[in-house]
Length: 89
Image (cartoon, rainbow, N blue to C red; front, side, top):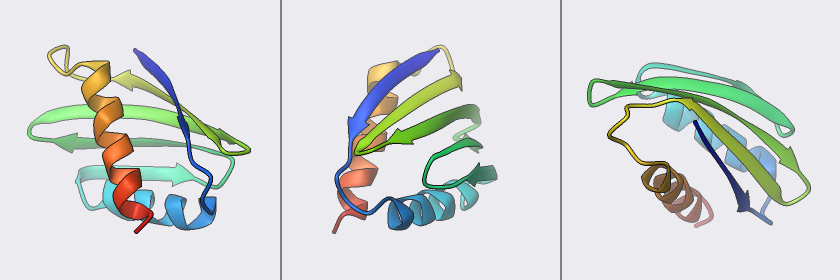
């Protein structure tokens, strides 16, 4: 399991919409959530990922509870941070 926090001072509604689109574009992508909390799951490159998030102020708490054992938590966090940086533009 992976747990990490991301500071995100931008509007949360736009971020959630973009994350929903990105997750649902993946194979078996499911996103259920809003600007306070949610869950996601999808398949990428033959691997299943699943987790959830909770937003409190400008902090997003992310928990990934299903991932391939070869994929590190640091890599997942880096990919999410990279995506959020792109979403800001």
